[in-house]
Length: 285
Image (cartoon, rainbow, N blue to C red; front, side):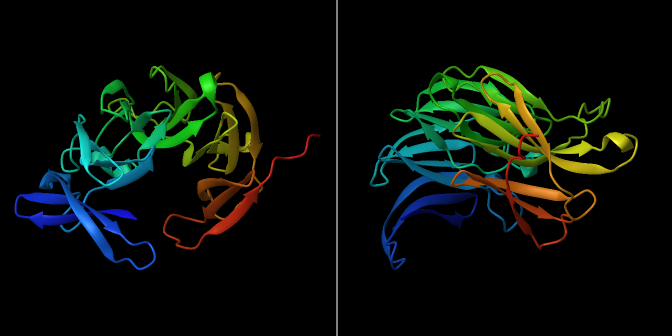
């Protein structure tokens, strides 16, 4: 079992990879990886994000705008620095998820807090294959589909984006904006509920708020799930869920297991209680 450990030392922090015995938690060894400037800290007493992934017999560490590739024993092989702004200089940092690196077919895909781009990196040597900017990037949802139809699914503050893992070509598959937005900031209200899922059959499943047709000028909202073909961008189906608690309800995350969909919901963001729903497709009329 591998974990990253940070030791603060004045103006910098030391990042160490620690090997633990899975059954007991006893430390088996450690390797110092690199030194991080304290700008990676989000606030006083709170450290920034650090994520680990294991694939192809190697370890990959993403933190502080950099990516490291290590062998199976934790020995660093390469390091790559990304264009990155720390949380003190980048207010959008707080809206971005700390995703573990995603590895597919010998390529590492990464989007970190502090970056507004998705990068594809060769797992063998750290060579940058491509980098595409993504405005208001929030989360790398996952990989949907297989072969030439596979796409990376990315959630932004205003949309769902599909990226071809081969060359980084990008397509917006769902515009989540609800209204024209602020004329100065250019940020529109979003109907996205930040609950999205990439599926093996090449679909993105996205939860959105949907206005009731009979009350278009009122705040009455329902929750709908939208199934989108990530390769073509076509919407396969939209299903409105039965009424959930709260007005409007807050939902997420979405999860898949054994061919079924599961959804969490809560009446409002301040309520720590959650309901778990199994979501099934409506029968054909």
